Length: 229
Image (cartoon, rainbow, N blue to C red; front, side, top):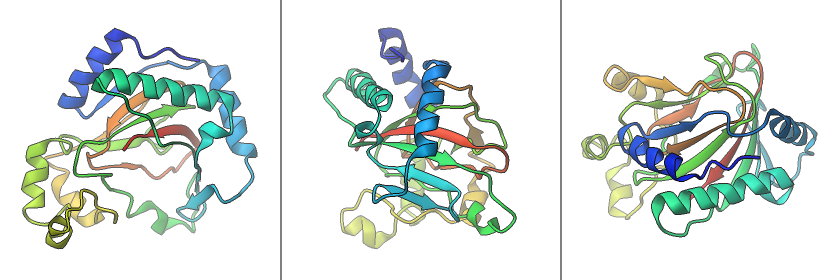
């Protein structure tokens, strides 16, 4: 597996997260390890910790770090990496194993209502892409600059990211997804950045940026996601 938590990566990640909202660590994991985890995902039985979305084309296995040694190792490495990056002890509350399959002809609506942000406050996740992502295989994509404080203040003031009622209640998250039509109105100023990468690539992302998994229209995408609160 990988040792991506070296000092150079941590320094570069700090700068990139402020500037871009993400940092890509290319080719961190061996293809053999990535294939092993893919096989685990494919063979996993549907149970109470396995969810499906978007007409069954996305499967998420919760707490996958408890179910596979290689995923447990990734989970631990993410904890060390982010603890060093943030200079305080943090631990992911779960690592999801995710499979996104091609949308069929009958799943047109499943391509919509995917844009969202996890929190209006800074929140970090670490993704590991187990196979390569392309424009057509459902890459993770972010709207440029939407992780920045000025963008959030501007759009909070008009209730676009949270309603006034949610703000008064002291909430920091927007649990419902963002409207596709509204997102399209801001894309000219905040263009999409699809994160295209090879297999075994880890990506640290500030998921307070507006983001989504683009609908998969070709192939299958496998990934792990370490969630930090």
